Amino acid sequence: MFPDGICRVRDNYYTKTIQFQDINYQLAQQEDKTAIFEEWCSFLNFFDSSVNFELSFVNMSTDAADFDKHIRIRHRFDNYDDVRDEYSGMLQTQMAQGNNGLTKTKYLTFGIEAVSMKQAKPRLSHIQTDVINNFRRLGVKTKVLNGAERLKLMHNMFHMGDNEKFTFDWKWLPGSGLSVKDFIAPDSFVFKGGRQFKMGTFDGAMSYLQIIPPRSLRCIYSQLIRTRRSRR
Image 1 (cartoon, one colour):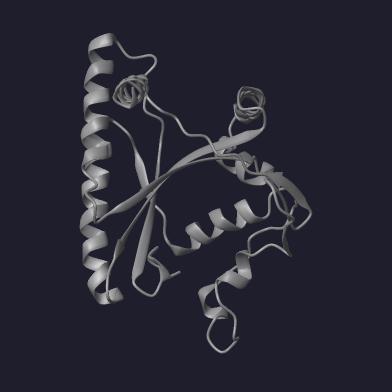
Image 2 (tube, rainbow, N blue to C red):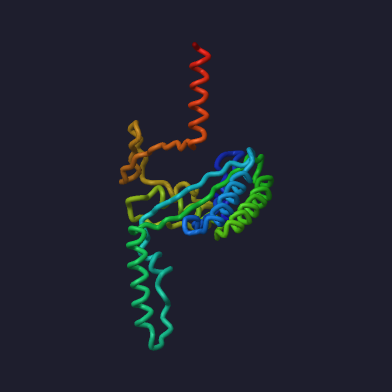
């Protein structure tokens, strides 16, 4: 992982991650829904075969301190600070109840093949600009994650169920013999077989879901009928 947010996953493969907000689709008028859907299709078709991408929807237990920092209204040391405190408390209660104590975030990670960082960096920057513009047409706000933010995200994923805080500084790497992996990895991984696993003190399970559109199902059904008839 590099400070600018580029990650060298393997020798010739580089990625970047963009956080994006919700698309207000369900509450939109029918005409707006059609426009949003068409823009979303265009957005997905933007990625050609040379660009891999992955959508991640992450639900994490809310960090109380970080949550309070974003919600609490700062005091202005006038006669209304008690009102600000009351309103901040109301916001905290509503947010906690509405999301069941979870922070829900969405990310798009894209990657390309390149022979070197020098070749990968300008192309990733160009793709990043296009992705942000495509999101803007959908009315969606975005944020490009830097290296530390991507590491913190992965740390949170690898430390579900414990209270370990992410602590990291780039200046700790030179001369220490450590890599960024040492700051995000859990205490242990145990894969006993099947779909269950253990990650540190956290027990988990993995499921795979394949969604086949109805049109594809009809095509598969028609193909099966033709195959049966040809065998007769």
